[in-house]
Amino acid sequence: MAFQLWENLKEAITVYTGLSPAAFFTVLALLWAVYYVLSGLFGPSNTHHQRRSREFQEQMQPLPPPVQLGEVTEEELKQYDGSDPQKPILMAIKGQIYDVSQSRTFYGPNGPYALFAGKDASRALAKMSFEEKDLTGDISGLGPFELETLQDWEFNFMSKYVKVGTIKSTVPVANETSAGESAETKEGEAAIPVEDGLSESAAVKAEESPSGIDAVKD
Image 1 (tube, rainbow, N blue to C red):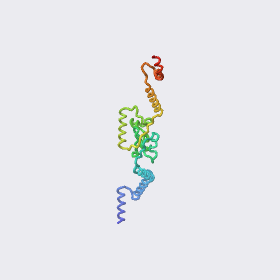
Image 2 (image 1 turned 120 degrees about the horizontal axis):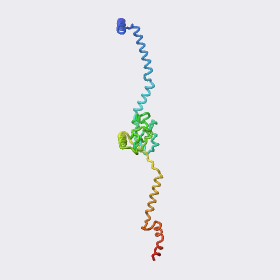
Image 3 (image 1 turned 30 degrees about the horizontal axis):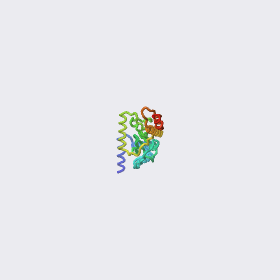
C-alpha cells in the first residue's frame, strides 16, 4: 500500500512539475535552506523580542499617584523632564504644573513633545513652535489667535492631567524696598501741613517759634 502511494506521488511530481522526484526534492530542500537563512538574518532575534516585551510590560505597569509639589522654581521643574525614569514627567502652562506621565510616549524621551517636558512651554504651545527661544512662560505680545490656542491647550490639560503645583514667581527685593521707602517718605511728607503763601521751611520755622511771631505782631 505504501509502495503504491509512493509510485503515485512520483508520477504526480513528474506530471505537475516536469521534474524528476529527485530533482523536485532537491529544489524543495534548497528553498527550505534559503528560507531558514533569511529568517535568521532578518527575523527578530530573541534579544530584540525580549527587549520589546520588557518595554511593553513597563508601559503596562500602573503609574504611581501624582505627587503634589507645591511651589517650585523653573530650575527645579527641569528635574522632571522624563530623563529620570524614577520621577514623574511634569510640564507647566501659564505657571500651572501638570503631571503628564501617562502620556510618556508624547512627552517622554524621544517623544514628539519631549522638549516641552520640565518647562513652562506656554509661548511655544500658543505659537505651535518648537524653537528653543519659545520654550518659556512669557506670553506677552501674543495675538488673539495665539492666546486662544493656548487657552485650548490649558483646557485640555485641566481635563486630562492632574495639577501638582505652580511655578514660583520671583519678585526683585530691591523694587519692594524702594517702593516701601517711597511710600514711607510720602506719608512723612503728608503728615506736615503747609499753609497757603508759606514755603515748607517757613511753615516749620513758624511752628517752632510761635512766640516770635506774636512779638512782631505786638
